[in-house]
Length: 392
Ligand code: ADP
Figure 1 (tube, protein in one colour):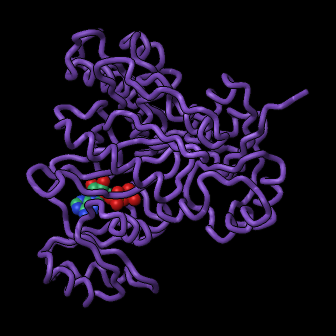
Figure 2 (cartoon, rainbow, N blue to C red):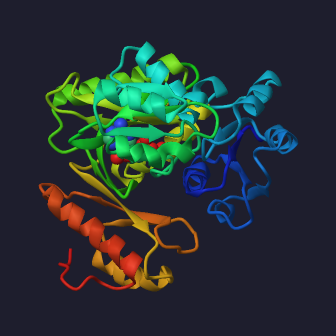
């Protein structure tokens, strides 16, 4: 008798793809509703169906063939998910939780209601509203589209009143979010997982380094993070998960603000495995993709402890090299202890096409681990060894 459940993932990007390995290991079946025949996850799963996740009937038919529905992205319209829930489909995270990751205004209100540290913020519908907000908080301010933004798209920094002209075209109906510009020292992220029956766990807090608003590197754990800040942000993330009813993996992105208030502010929530958690695939007892599957099935959660003193994740963005496999000999021999993850995507400039994880050997300094991950990622990106690199 077959009793293994089928998990349906809406969206076929690299996050769905990276669930495939752990699903195979656990004997679970993954179905993917993919945006097209060539997206990242299609080659990795036995059951991929191409369809529009915004179409009610497509979504319903997909849900009918699986035991639980979960996500690779946060773009499925909430009202369609509410209908699935009313029809008795297990949707994790539930739409009532997911809306906090879909809409930054909803998220800001929830963070405020829970008494957790937010930057100063307001809902605005005109540039005059923005000017009035800036008169209270001072310039610069940050204007954000509440929905659909990613990798800095949908974020506009306004340096001064003259910058308001740039914002004119942003008001196309519906409120926008404006925030004070936070003079943060660095960006942190904390990843948690929660199962429907309530258990929740957190991984160590990490530092995430963004370049041009795209995650470039993650250091786990965040170096020299005061223990009281680590404890506070972990408690905040677990509280958010519980109070919002999150199921599955959630990343809470934060700004570190030493010497002011709680020492951190919440930036945003992602309710799915997240780029800042890719290090866990090799650097923690349980990786985020396995954990997400466990959580959405309401299975006992795995241990989240780090398996090395430091782990570094370096993203590989599309660059000069279009033949990734052609770079494998050089990349793999340059860093035998680094782990290469490639997403099966065509190379386009700046596109996330893979990442490299490197773990510290006993007593190995963080700088050496970073150099190792960076070198291997650079070989994949550029197709050749950087001129001045050291070997492992
Ligand atoms: P996205 O949805 O694109 O990830 P975010 O809200 O995370 O958007 O913003 C993208 C980046 O812009 C952040 O990682 C941070 O570097 C910067 N940023 C966002 N909000 C603020 C803010 N209030 N103050 C200063 N920088 C900010």
